[in-house]
Amino acid sequence: MVYETGLGPLPSTPIVDLTGEHVPQMVALTQLTNPGPFASRTIAFGHYKGVFKGDELVAMAGQRFNPFNFKEISAVCTHPSHLGKGYARQLLIYHINKILADSCRPFLHVRDDNERAIKVYESLGFSTRTNIHFFVMKKEN
Image (cartoon, rainbow, N blue to C red; front, side, top):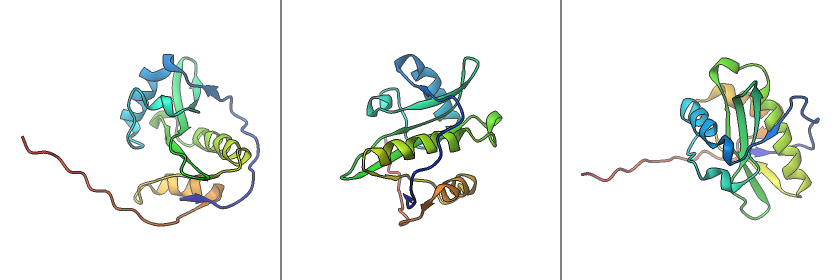
């Protein structure tokens, strides 16, 4: 999906820079929610931000690929106990504004069966550019 509109409002939820100390929580959250590939060194791509409730990371999003003048918003996920509170929306608004301020265009990937996320993305101004088919190949032992 590609972002099609202008700057959004400023996020109203406190957003925290995620660092190496947060990696175990980041990996645990992505394993629970499965937003796509994420490993302990993914944070090196940069700009990962999160929302905490107490000491618990409950939502996060970052940036990964930067082809030409596009920047990907990546690993958008929310702990299932905290869905519907707008945390992912606030993180998306932060990243959209940052990417636009860098004179780039935000984009992201989403599974076509993830209707909840697609509705959030569309409500913020993303539209589907194309469908991509992925195949997993495994080596036989």
